[in-house]
Length: 266
Picture 1 (cartoon, rainbow, N blue to C red):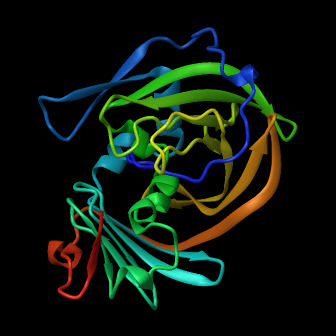
Picture 2 (picture 1 turned 180 degrees about the horizontal axis):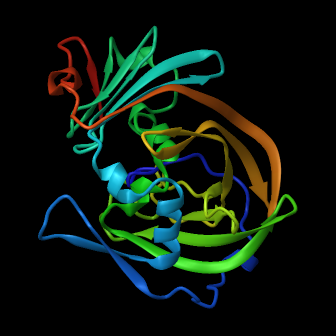
Picture 3 (picture 1 turned 135 degrees about the horizontal axis):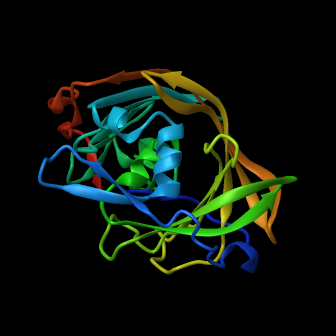
């Protein structure tokens, strides 16, 4: 996702959860942002999810997030400036950076084994930091009909993006919320990064093993699944996340700068 949210997509979504639900919590809540003159308004059903994960006010105090992510035997260190959204992904054989304007790969683009470093550089940060990143400006919310998945009934929040928001404003998301805890259990998502076309095909991401850090909750495990005809299919990938560090100050900015030998991905 690139709103910045981007993902892989496969499967189909049923009409059952595409229909808007009766809006029982239509009242909106105002949350003050870092700028005194700016206020963002959220529907109550989304504000409740933010609070269940530790609260937006606590999230907005932070300037730095860092963690280790292990995927298929490869461990990466991810560093994010939460104010500017610059980021750095370091592995043994490659480093990916985003300096606020461009994505670069060191020592060369070929060092990164994936399809696209521009696609990947903040992919797991946005997975990991939902619901907080969905409180960014330009995000639209809709309360949809409850959905049953894997034998459990969930409240559903639909998310879309305003025109020109991020790299792929055509992406759509469905947040499946545990009605007892108001926490995110599943994310259903589309991806439009590679062709720029809206899609009705969804994949599923399971949020597991929540851990608390500075009063905020983040999953220690993310498992992606195929999703078709309203049912969970085969596992597509699984990542573990640990060594989370959260700081109020922003990280040193020079480490996001493109090294001389690095290559830029357009």
